[in-house]
Length: 259
Ligand code: DAK
View 1: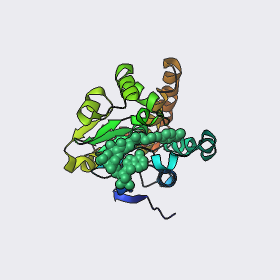
View 2: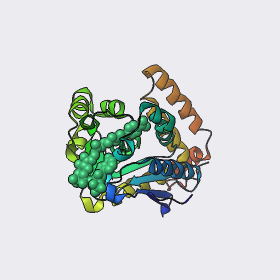
View 3: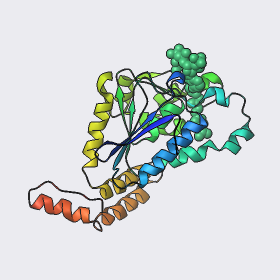
């Protein structure tokens, strides 16, 4: 597939792929084609064994300023239903490998939701997060009311969703929405550093661990603990578990193969 609105670098670094949202003039507004391309690229990277971690980024001015308002403006509810944007977003959520959002500038509406759908967020000091949909007569539709509330709590989420006001990277960091805030010059490097840390670990254990953390958002404690235990036992079916523990005992660096 030839992409028009994203750029992909499957070998950005060893075991790490990069996807860049690329509609700079529109502040990376997420139109349907961009979202389809993103879904396709993520699904392909998820299948490639040599890729262990994926970074999604935009440019210094915008990660993404939301879904494309011009494309949505004249839509009816039935148009929205038929287009079924949910399906695309669901696919993104289902990516099994860790996905890191490297955010600079605007991460608004669907852009904030996309970043929150990723597993971790590294942001530049210039990043601004917000759910401004209320200002254009709608509300968040791709997880904003749910993921934001779970991440930063009811009081702050309610204020952001009901007023549409943005928060700074520092505020987002203090609120627990994002992992790191760094100078604009290094936000991608910092995301890469984090990706490299993960990419040298067992891909099997990383996948099972990611799945287990995400489960905490969907289940009660008992069911979550049961799920975690199953995944923990599953680690012992991997060669990586033998390699990891053997390397510890032999005081050497493990060489994980993802098997
Ligand atoms: N859509 C389309 N075009 C956009 C855009 C957007 N979201 N954001 C910016 N642009 C375009 C502007 O129209 C402008 O284009 P031209 O006029 O030059 O042709 C260009 O990008 C530069 O923007 P500005 O001139 O406005 O730049 P400023 O620096 O002055 O302002 C801004 C930047 C980010 C504050 C401003 O552009 C802005 O307020 N943008 C809209 C932010 C917004 O309201 N975002 C939420 C959109 S609703 C769902 C999935 C997703 C969603 C819902 C459901 N399902 C799965 C069901 C998501 C919904 C949304 O995100």
